[in-house]
Amino acid sequence: MDYVSTRGETGAAFSDVLLGGPAPDGGLYLPGHWPQFSQDAIRGFAGQPYAEVAFRVMRPFIGDAFTDDEFRTDVEGAYAAFAHKAVAPLVQLDSDLFLLELFHGPTLAFKDVAMQLLGRLFARALAKRNRHATVIVATSGDTGSAAIAALRGQPNVDVVVLHPHGRVSEVQRRQMTSALDDNVHNIALEGTFDDTQNIVKALFADSEFAGRTNLTAVNSINFARIVAQCVYYFTAASSLGAGFGRKVNFVVPTGNFGDIFAAEAAARMGLPIERLVVATNANDILARTLATGRYETGRASPTLSPSMDIQVASNFERALFEASGRNAAWVKDAMKGFAATNALTIPTDILVTLQQRYDAAAVDDAETVATIARIYRETGNVVDPHTAVGLGAAARLKLDGPVVALATAHPAKFSTAVSQAVGKPAELPLHLSDLLGRKERYTVLPNAIGAVRGFVLEHTRNR
Image 1: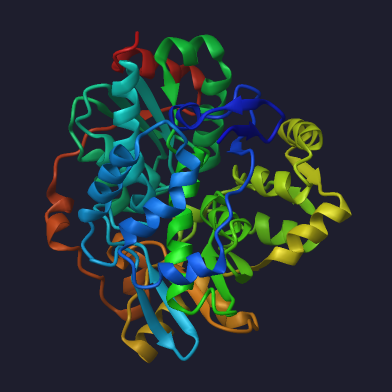
Image 2: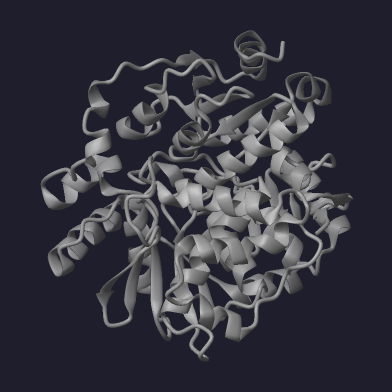
């Protein structure tokens, strides 16, 4: 399997994609072609162990980077640690409404489903190459802790995590900053998530610095994350009759567009999906874009669903690339213009293609709290505010057939919103019950690339 950049470069192998960040031309990697799964194969996924489906779905993307035995060992190791045997269980809320619970990993968020595997593959690939890497992560709350949980203590990796200071929940922050391993370095940046993301992109664009530090990324710009997230769309849909002519709708709380693009990827591999719903909070750039064709940033506003307080959705570039018929020249020009002006008018034919696949709805904080309360009252289930954004969007749209709303985080990670809605916080699982009393270590830095560059050089082993 060869990989291509959304901006035109070709010829990368899976190991390059796994250990790299953006492509050298600034674009994002995608496979040169999408592997295809027959409806017979998809029917066969029903009832299989999650690790087995993950092996089958992901194997075509791996090429010769790992042997079958190596890859199977890492897949089985990654998912053996999850608190629920099914890894990503479905919970029925109504006759045709289901929650896909993705929070049974060590940090209680959907990021664990990909990151626990990615960390193992990453360590294996680095050992094969006898090299060290500096992993840099911009996080709106959950990716950072998932990356730390996957890579802490690894002898050939330094992990540098940037989160927006004061804009993540206390549980989210402490899950990152209470990891005191020598190879873990937390930065609280005085800015928004978009600011952290811009600095990370700028550091990758600095070829001298990136080469000097062996810089790489495990954010959803890393395609290995995307393909690992494809798996739970296959397991959920197959258990609801996909492959027997039944199509499923997925409603995805969306910030950086990686998780919902993984659903598009699954559809491109043959999974029968009816509609994909982009559920956003008050930071509704994606809902506005899909309605009007104008992709234009504003100022990210803090909400009760902080992981979605994003204006620039990096993975949207991948969707634009596919919707344009893989027109890399157009994507390159469009992204260059967007970087200069923070605005892009999507051509009508590309917008229509996007609208044929995606619906969108924005849910504000008041509706989020009301949805948490309603779900608790009607079903007894407590959901976190990001999941509530998805359920609020699902309630507003008229969708035919089964609807699967992604439950992206454990409600205990967002006690403020949950307490507002149901009058009490959700309890942390036993392995995190002492989290709020653990010692923290992090550094507050100004929103300046020079400050972050100096920190990385001073604290990692690549100086």
